[in-house]
Length: 303
Ligand SMILES: Cc1cc2nc3c(=O)[nH]c(=O)nc-3n(C[C@H](O)[C@H](O)[C@H](O)COP(=O)(O)O)c2cc1C
Image 1: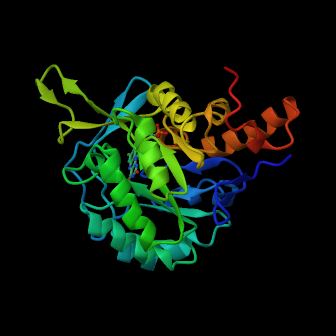
Image 2: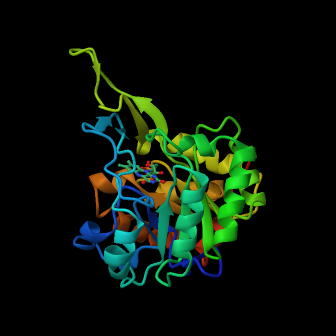
């Protein structure tokens, strides 16, 4: 049975199961409980040029079937990442996808060119869709024309496989995806969190210090599934799904909808062993359904 997934010549996954940005940090904590070389890919926490403290606490709240976070892209900054985290991540026989974001266009270009020469980086995932930061983030990701220009500039700055992570907030996600493809992206990650909030009825105050945050986890899976399907009808570049996946069944469903691979985020915070369970579940599913190549089911939804 062949579970290999080819996103590009440089980004070939041994299976479609990846970590999602921001729920896996830089892999160190997870490496103490699971074998990271089993994963199809590791996606790092979103990096910026300078270190960022993120938003004030409280910045996480549980919801039925999910969570809202307003972390605000806290990270150690690109320099510290390259020096102290990338060499460790590079030890695993698993492609490392570096997620990054900027607060202006120049930041995106500089980050992409800094990462371009790093041999341990298999691909870049450009975040243009975070709902929790004041500058940049989601505002970059909603406008197809603006995004075309931004992705084109980043494309010039790197030869690495370039994935662009979309927001579910775009009024027409297919239009945004087409712009990203035309600008030269190699793949699309679909999707980031959905803007959300929680209120404490006793204090009459918002639960999160930032007031609003992004909803993730199984609660958003049907939305993410729809977005993947919608995007897959309009682009030919590979799609990587994100949004609520928690089981091998979810991974199969995302693949049928058109995703080549699936990132697991919030659910791994609840069950760090889920990666192994999901990978084993996929093997079993292939046996039961007499599938030789898992990649063959991508986009095979019968409508
Ligand atoms: C705590 C937390 C931090 C996140 N940080 C990032 C980030 O730094 N960059 C990014 O592109 N997405 C970030 N995300 C979004 C996830 O990568 C993912 O797109 C989203 O949570 C949906 O997947 P899930 O439902 O499996 O968590 C974050 C999500 C959570 C819950």
